[in-house]
Length: 136
Image (cartoon, rainbow, N blue to C red):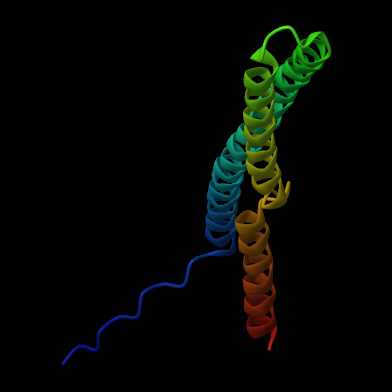
């Protein structure tokens, strides 16, 4: 009866090659994750900036309408000032809504790729844990 042969232990050079390959793969994967996270955060920041920009433009038009309202109210020639005042109020309300939407988008935005940071931290802890077990 023959005993089953134990697989040969990998040599030190083989282990070093595996370590190099796995480390390279790990770094590439973490960089891909960081890129994906930063792309998503950039998109969210762009949308927030767009809402702030829309709020600014609408506020500018609101100011122009307010000036028009003041001119028409002072003239008191026609009741058109009432219509101009209504337009002014609507534009300022729209500007406020757009600015609040922009603010909300920016509040949830952090520049740190959190998942990547957590993954790298876990990877470092895993390597430390294995090195402790290998030396024990």
